[in-house]
Length: 538
Image (cartoon, rainbow, N blue to C red; front, top):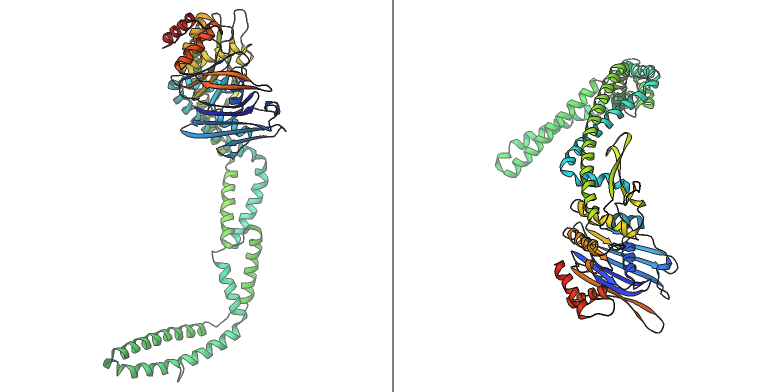
């Protein structure tokens, strides 16, 4: 809800601040005092468009600040409109676009009257209003429908993907077969390329390797080699190792070196014994690695990637070669999903139409209370060519406010006063399900008086049990219903006019209602009537 608004240098308002609370807040004042300027300022804070004409004469810029609670969080809005035409929007201190601000504020408040900023006039929201009103019967049907819609979307997408590839399948079939055969013919093994590279290096440097291995073998295991010398050292240490723990430790380390050197000697001898090369082996290895290099250029940078590509095209071949079977399977799945979707769409549509009938009947009753005795409202459903994410149809509220008038969209309703009362009727029925915390009504009392005015006041107060209501009025019957009352008035000095806003005490509220009843000539009779109105409202 809206907690506070600060207005500076806006139209005829030099500076004004208003704290709003829960329930019904009523704003009154003489004609021309600037009541609608306050609504316009709120509208701008909520994201409506502005231009430099709003800036108070002689000022550089207008500044409107609004504090509110939305979804359990505090938000702060600041709009600056400069005389040069520059506009700036801030939300919680961050600069945002007008569109971003409007999107957030559309969940905070609706303004009904000459400065409309409301979801009810947009037909795109009407289906959601019906769904929200009938949520007990519609919510589960919407969930079932959305699951069916997602299943159909997936099935039809898979079928479409398969069919779109049908014309290329013949070309791909021969191409994939050739690639698979080429890879299969190579009989690749993971790690083979690295083994071949290592073997070629050995073969190309066999002379150097053989000489080095022979030298190492003689130095380690030959007569007077390292093993023989180290063995003598180990034998000598064994004869004295029992005399000292330090000697025993040295012996263990020497034995470890001796055994490890034996392993090295064995490996060197094994290498020397394997240095027998088949004639032409190096050519065969080079030829094999050239074959793999050729495949790497086509199918992957490693043998493993080539084999993975082979598995991929094998799966593609399986789909192509079994295309008719796959097509039949996906077609059947898509048809089954479509049938289920249409059935769920029909059930959802039936529930919506039943709910819409109940909703519009209740709204018609509300309109009758509000002096629209011949009004008729209905929800017109228009089928879509094919069901979409929200169902198989759209909906729009149509209204005939007077006898003999044709049904027409809500946005085409003539006067601001009529529109405000129509919105009041709708919101009194949908108030518990709409999710919008604040409603602002301007011109709601245009063209009404007497009993109808009392009914309007009562309806406003009923809605304020679940919402914050801010209402501008000229009628004492409505003003008497306010939980909080504000008066807007003008003051003049020698050169300027100023609009002031004040919250009224109970006595001041009584005096203001007396003024609404009898004009500036407030008498004890009008004061008594004002008190009676307030008591009646309570």
